[in-house]
Image 1 (cartoon, rainbow, N blue to C red):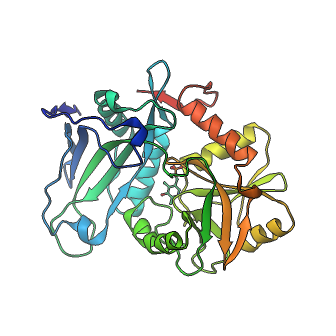
Image 2 (cartoon, rainbow, N blue to C red; image 1 turned 90 degrees about the vertical axis):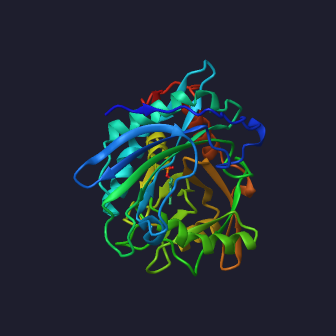
Length: 353
Ligand SMILES: *Cc1c(COP(=O)(O)O)cnc(C)c1O
């Protein structure tokens, strides 16, 4: 398939790289391709960024049959553009697609399309410290139809956003509220898919935590509300007594690319990493016994997000004196170093655009 390109006649002014925030600015172009039953994915095109025109009955508005991904492009000091393990995102897109009854995309072609779009928008990639170009591929169901069934038409769209740090705190430790009323996902549900409904389900708890002065929530399992699942939209790691523990992928947890990268890096440093069930009470007991050394979240947006405080039922646990742990800092430096080409990529994780 050939990707047609229609260039914008009205390029936008680029935002101040020191005031980017996250996900507020979008580049001049976007990629779109369509799906129709019998025809497959077709008409791949790069067009000027702009509003979509969709019938009010379009299924995505009503039933949320859609998926998304999130990855970043980084500019190196010698002006090359790197992607970090993008094949993992496209592989996961198809895992999400399968759960949502969306037809699979050709992962190689989708990666080629993303690279084409980034090449065209190269000047939009910020190069200030802790900035990057966030890439948001997503798929929406587009049949104009009111009724719950798989759509027979879809759109695959990729938009790009120059971004700074995800949290205003940057790498400063965040305060986390352990949510004991609302749940994010349950076994058999859609927690392992990057799909719209999971985030809609999370907003209420996020609001509650924010009103109490917390940045994110720590989710517990949806059945017993006993085992740790994720922190906000990040996977979570605990360093207890020299060992690192992260919840095992159990069907309700999103399998993060950053999570996998952290596990592989720690193993390469001969740190013991265990993927298993971990009860919130184990975390609290470890804190009481002085063995809880660090907690950190992992995700593309923030990379590593150290946790400085946990609030569980009103009890406040201060982690590592509220400071960044040594391991969190080392992981952050290593991963961002590889992503930006400042450190050698011994893992073979980056791809040049
Ligand atoms: C995207 C996401 C993550 C992090 O995944 P990465 O591939 O590391 O960015 C973790 N949890 C949830 C719920 C997510 O949506």
